[in-house]
Length: 363
Image: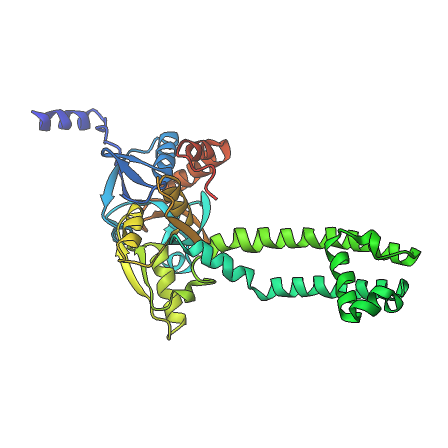
């Protein structure tokens, strides 16, 4: 019967309505706050952005779950999906291989380490014995030795009875101590020049105290919290370590590239599928460090109840992020998606999405 109906439509010059093809959109779980599942429902910055773009452009789609980012990239390359969504970094290697959408944010890499209970105290002690602090203290002593010599000369301390009775060394030490500490300055000078040096010593003490407080605050209290890794300065410092990365991510590619450019560097890459596996990897000893997207690590730490971990080497290898199109995706549809991303970003809706996910203070 249906055959005759179609034939009748053709004879009458009508064309049967065809259903609009649905875009196959590949997405990976375990990448909060970018893409993740809660009770079977997909959430995250990339997922919510895609929904906003699809709604604006009236694009029909279906989400296709992928096990790992590596599987997702393979699927879009083999045209098994039309679009891969996520916070997919535009690394130089990927730009040569894939067709990216408009960007919607920039993010770098970071390293997450486990915080050990005694490490902060040890790092603070090491900072207290740093060459810079010794140089500052030596400068402080040198200035007041010169000031003491000035007072010694202006007030003729070499000829005083106290000096003759106690000796020149003990008397000079007294003058130096009083100038350096403050109390008793009125007892060591009588001349105008001596009083001028006392006033100058007061100003210098205040200035030096300010320098010392600033140094201790910045270099002894704050910096050790970011140096609990034993003065880690680059990924090269991960030599002989086990480093966990999400499979197929830019983090894995960066680590592999670092090892290619440093042939003597030996790092064992430990695969993990989800960013929320990072605490377990560190606590269990399966990994000594985790390299991942900085925003994902910060979001993870923000939602952890126990502050056992810390971030080092912030904002490594920053890249723009976007979606990836299959090579066979129609240019018109790619143009709609790009236009939708720009409109969502310019309208402020992208920032609203970030705020709703608790991403406004990730730093």
